[in-house]
Image (cartoon, helix red, strand yellow):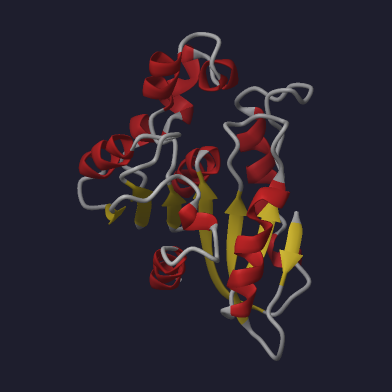
Length: 214
């Protein structure tokens, strides 16, 4: 993982960041680097984590979850002045990981355009699609966030209505099913990447959500 701490004296809160890319090995943690720099400038340390993906040896589920769980055992060893507050932040496929981990770790979650229903994603895109190759149907019950509810932690889901990668309706259904655990921040006319783009005017909603859960 890439650790970025704000300048100046701590202690600082921490965001554990999980990148997207439909769990494919062609995408990596560089994808969320600009978000992490912006968080550090706002006084929030970040640990931008890598994990095994489809295309890596053994990269199918539950490898990514195992990697994330291992990483979280190292929180106390990170070399920065941590104030004890931690939030999981995941975008797209990373949103699936963040929500899944929230249930197991007890940490609050900010999910940005998350794949919260892997079963639906695989059904819509077909048996050769990235979601179907990532997670076998017999693992949905222990890997797909919608099927893990209730998670038992606060969650804020940020999603644009013009997202053509992960449908906004997936998040709307997820938050409704979360029955009070989750809050949906709807970004009208916004696509898939604006929530992780510090140059977008909509990025402030991501930062606001993280600050709210810290």
